Image 1 (cartoon, helix red, strand yellow):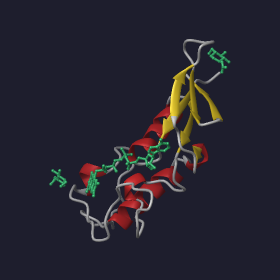
Image 2: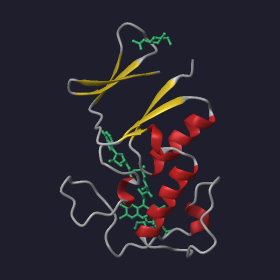
Image 3: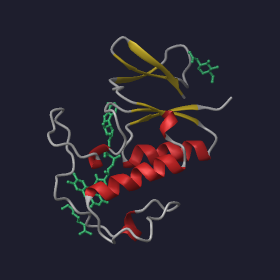
Image 4: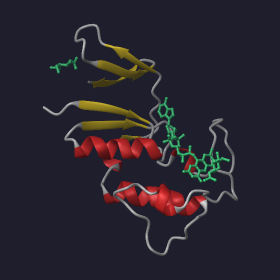
Length: 136
Ligand SMILES: Cc1cc2nc3c(=O)[nH]c(=O)nc-3n(C[C@H](O)[C@H](O)[C@H](O)COP(=O)(O)OP(=O)(O)OC[C@H]3O[C@@H](n4cnc5c(N)ncnc54)[C@H](O)[C@@H]3O)c2cc1C
Ligand SMILES: *[C@@H]1O[C@H](CO)[C@@H](O)[C@H](O)[C@H]1NC(C)=O
Ligand SMILES: *[C@@H]1O[C@H](CO)[C@@H](O)[C@H](O)[C@H]1NC(C)=O
């Protein structure tokens, strides 16, 4: 049986972690506290949740060749340095291309990760009384 892996957060790091798990025949479940992917690249007008995010005028300062995932180059017509909307679009294209969204449980905040007492190799990932399962 495939090993279960918990990925916390569906930002730049999280969605590439999901893909790496799938590539290695692992069984990822990604827990994302917000309702969308992209992490700090998901622009919102206000940050009521206190999370740091891109600001309205933000343009990337790393070229597209240097900031793409190595297995998913930017479209030819993307500018070398782009605004945050385009960068978020890229992340969405990446997630859709590799069919990663189905592994993400949105609106799910992880509050604790604890070793299970019964099996040394298993971990419990949970929030309050809602135990979302185990990962190894
Ligand atoms: C203003 C700004 C500009 C930047 N510009 C550039 C740039 O031009 N080029 C560049 O390469 N990098 C830039 N960066 C760096 C940026 O940190 C990275 O590009 C990248 O977004 C980091 O991704 P991440 O997935 O590690 O974290 P994040 O994007 O922060 O994603 C973390 C995700 O985890 C979720 N999460 C957190 N805690 C929990 C929890 N307990 N339970 C469930 N979900 C949780 C969050 O909701 C979020 O979706 C910039 C950063 C900032 C702040
Ligand atoms: C991009 O901006 C960040 C934040 O100001 C800075 O730390 C980083 O060195 C910059 N990168 C380049 C390539 O200019
Ligand atoms: C813990 O891991 C073992 C061995 O991989 C597995 O058989 C078992 O079902 C897991 N226990 C729980 C409670 O998930």
